[in-house]
Image 1 (cartoon, helix red, strand yellow):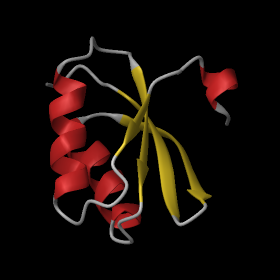
Image 2 (image 1 turned 30 degrees about the vertical axis):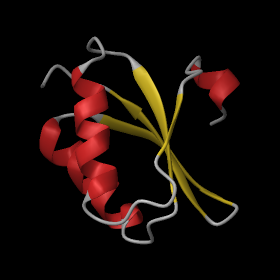
Image 3 (image 1 turned 180 degrees about the vertical axis):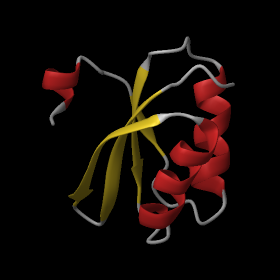
Length: 83
Protein backbone atom coordinates (compact mmCIF):
# COMPACT_ATOMS: atom_id res chain seq x y z
CA UNK A 1 0.00 0.00 0.00
CA UNK A 2 1.39 3.42 -0.90
CA UNK A 3 1.01 6.70 0.92
CA UNK A 4 -1.32 7.95 -1.82
CA UNK A 5 -3.51 4.86 -1.52
CA UNK A 6 -3.77 5.16 2.25
CA UNK A 7 -4.43 8.88 2.39
CA UNK A 8 -1.62 9.26 4.93
CA UNK A 9 0.71 12.09 4.03
CA UNK A 10 2.78 12.53 7.16
CA UNK A 11 6.08 10.66 7.38
CA UNK A 12 7.77 10.55 10.78
CA UNK A 13 11.50 10.25 10.11
CA UNK A 14 13.15 8.16 12.83
CA UNK A 15 16.19 7.18 10.78
CA UNK A 16 19.42 6.94 12.76
CA UNK A 17 17.70 6.16 16.07
CA UNK A 18 18.35 2.85 17.81
CA UNK A 19 16.07 0.66 19.91
CA UNK A 20 14.05 1.59 21.93
CA UNK A 21 13.82 5.17 20.59
CA UNK A 22 11.81 4.45 17.39
CA UNK A 23 9.01 2.82 19.41
CA UNK A 24 9.10 5.43 22.17
CA UNK A 25 8.93 8.32 19.70
CA UNK A 26 6.22 6.58 17.68
CA UNK A 27 4.12 6.12 20.80
CA UNK A 28 4.54 9.77 21.77
CA UNK A 29 3.65 10.98 18.25
CA UNK A 30 0.56 8.75 18.05
CA UNK A 31 -0.66 10.14 21.38
CA UNK A 32 -0.99 13.52 19.63
CA UNK A 33 -3.18 12.13 16.82
CA UNK A 34 -6.91 11.32 16.89
CA UNK A 35 -8.07 7.69 16.76
CA UNK A 36 -8.15 6.44 13.18
CA UNK A 37 -5.34 8.74 12.00
CA UNK A 38 -2.54 7.18 9.97
CA UNK A 39 1.17 7.83 10.22
CA UNK A 40 4.14 6.58 8.21
CA UNK A 41 7.24 5.72 10.27
CA UNK A 42 10.66 5.44 8.61
CA UNK A 43 13.54 3.90 10.52
CA UNK A 44 16.98 2.42 9.96
CA UNK A 45 16.92 0.39 13.19
CA UNK A 46 17.00 -3.31 12.18
CA UNK A 47 15.05 -4.27 15.31
CA UNK A 48 12.10 -2.10 14.23
CA UNK A 49 10.76 -4.95 12.08
CA UNK A 50 10.12 -6.78 15.36
CA UNK A 51 9.46 -3.84 17.69
CA UNK A 52 6.96 -1.80 15.64
CA UNK A 53 4.55 -4.70 14.91
CA UNK A 54 4.76 -5.76 18.58
CA UNK A 55 4.08 -2.19 19.70
CA UNK A 56 1.02 -1.96 17.42
CA UNK A 57 -0.32 -5.25 18.72
CA UNK A 58 0.20 -4.31 22.37
CA UNK A 59 -1.35 -0.84 22.10
CA UNK A 60 -4.27 -1.61 19.77
CA UNK A 61 -2.97 0.11 16.65
CA UNK A 62 -3.18 -1.41 13.17
CA UNK A 63 -0.07 -2.01 11.09
CA UNK A 64 -1.37 -1.17 7.61
CA UNK A 65 1.88 -1.54 5.65
CA UNK A 66 5.38 -2.78 6.28
CA UNK A 67 7.94 -2.29 3.52
CA UNK A 68 11.70 -2.06 3.07
CA UNK A 69 13.24 1.25 2.02
CA UNK A 70 16.80 2.14 1.11
CA UNK A 71 18.79 1.51 4.29
CA UNK A 72 15.83 0.71 6.50
CA UNK A 73 12.13 0.07 6.77
CA UNK A 74 8.87 2.00 6.75
CA UNK A 75 5.60 1.26 8.44
CA UNK A 76 2.11 2.66 8.07
CA UNK A 77 0.28 2.69 11.38
CA UNK A 78 -3.38 3.50 11.95
CA UNK A 79 -4.01 4.67 15.48
CA UNK A 80 -6.49 2.63 17.46
CA UNK A 81 -8.74 3.81 20.28
CA UNK A 82 -6.02 3.26 22.89
CA UNK A 83 -3.77 6.13 23.91
